[in-house]
Image (cartoon, rainbow, N blue to C red; front, side, top):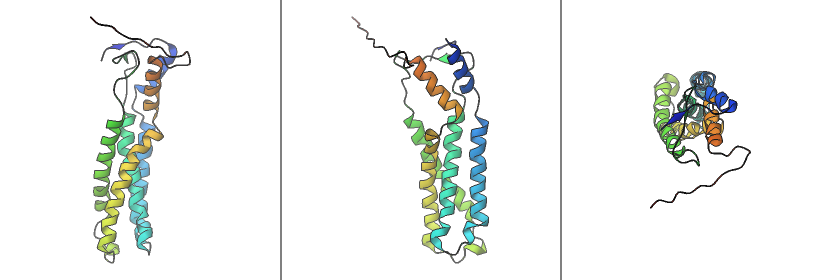
Length: 185
């Protein structure tokens, strides 16, 4: 895609925000994930009822999904001096949902691995039924896929800035929109 320098001060500001990895956002998701793993390992697994013990894999799945999805959205989206100019004047030609689905699939596939490793076969898990052990993995997978989509609801700075930059470049700032057509012979 061709690139050109930011046109306005607002575009420069947005491009500066979108050009750096959002470490605070992603670091928070990593810390939440580590906290969920520790909480499950040292507290939740010792609860007496099976239904209560299934809260742990759900927490691990959601927070791990946030690490995967939030990590992708926290990546830099432009360079400080150049803004991508994509396709037609109506705006960006690609959509975000294929990447969101891919991140959800990755998180949904890896969260059960994380829970399986974390759960282990320690003496506290001996009385658990096979159904409970299986449900821990299923719940972690579903929660991981859902957790990977949460960063689209609560996005990092880089993603918010790049989406705003796309809206400005599409002419959807508060000055109205435009319509164009091309006729070729």
